[in-house]
Length: 542
Image (cartoon, rainbow, N blue to C red; front, side):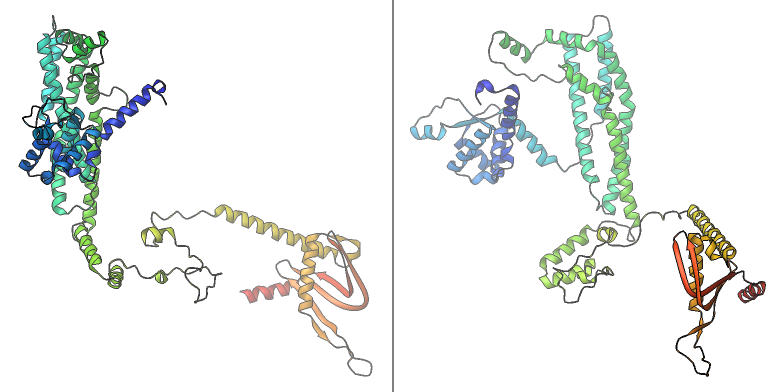
């Protein structure tokens, strides 16, 4: 892509890439040497140094890079120049000899971006793990400064420009220092909150830190935030005119940038002092007031404090549940890790079994499915997989968690079942009445399906209970075949009785909705059971 095709978005991406490259020296393999070299340059102001000068300063500091020779140091310096942390100096070299000129012809100086990155890196290396004290007294100074500035601006004649500059600069320096200390302190607080291995001493210190120090901070902020908001509301309509008046009085570097633009010279980017731009005042107001509907920084501070207290209570609950009064197992786990590191493979397995109860997979105790019979010689690699319950896999326990569910109400199903049983009983009673009325005239009626089913049920029971006898001839000898001596069945609940007789040459035809049934040599007689039989049945039941 040519230069004419590049857009403003690509230019901004290229600028961001260039700035991010300046952080590369902090992650390079030679980062300790790079940091030592950058500290030499940050210790001077507007100084350009040659390789011999840098070597002397490194030896005086006694740092990690003190033993670098001239060639290696030159390579490190050139790499920092390529990343944008250093600049080659245009300083004229005055040398008394050729050898001195060769040693001093390459001089370097610190770039603005490199100085800013190294300063931030030093702050991280020296103060990252420390709890920074919140400059809470500055909040009272911010409140006082805003109220005094609001009184001066709203007074007749307004505030004097020079006085306004001093007050605004002081005000924003105080506010910036307070806001930075708040952010650093709560960042440290979040680092402590992420720990779940606090012992009793650490927990006691953490509790005092939260209950005393944090409470004092939040109470002071909650007390002064409404006053600061009221002062800002009074001052807000006058801020644009105040900023214009200050610019006309003292433009500073902004005047140079404006003059360069009017003369069509390359643009000089200016970063103005805090408080000289309207956006700075918007940021100050947004810290104390909910201007965009997303909540102010004061609200976020209150929410962060509440979350910290909740985390403190969670740690307290864990410690109270412990029988020894402490929840931290950090020392025990470190000792166990050392045992694992020093143990032989077989001993490490024994330690794991003793520490965690993790035996072989064959001891899981999960029976296979009843329809899967796996021979003992089947390999675990090719055998079927046993489904492990989620509770056992995640928590190591089969115990059910949560409240027991309420007993399900089956009253509706019971009513449906009772109604269905009642209907079946009524249908069988109707079929029994139909059979009793049709007895002796089966050829003249057509039975229903229910009546024919009941009849076949009684007939099967009667034939199953029948007593057979071999018939006797006239000469007194038994002949082949069998006769029915008695065949009957009854249903006491339906009060119906079926009697079956065998008569040679008799044909009984049963007509029904499901078809016709022909019975050869059988006669059917259906009647009602006698009261005596019913009484005996009731007596035997009782």
